[in-house]
Image (cartoon, rainbow, N blue to C red; front, side, top):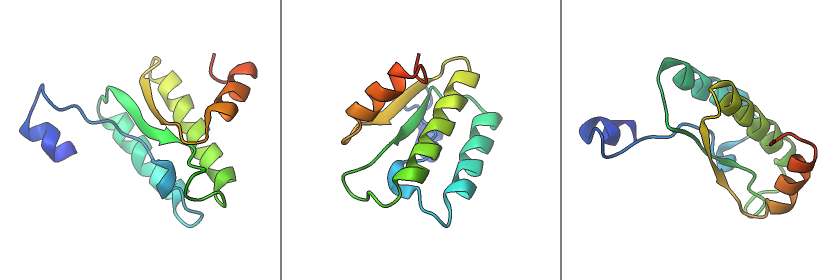
Length: 104
């Protein structure tokens, strides 16, 4: 996507984020470091696609939540940068987080 953005400036805008399908026990923390490095190096109009994927793999839910919450924190730190959230089976959890003021 970054290459396409460079080829079509002003027409294609990349987002940066760790998709929940790529949150794996052996690599998710390293992957988040890569995302954070990109976010610190340049502007992205949104952090995404992030979220919780309970459709394909429920075994990594605990680390998916950690990765998701970390990326929400980065969006807030970057002056409320937009989020592109994958929603598969997530609405109940988002409502719970909003009630706990995580997303307020």
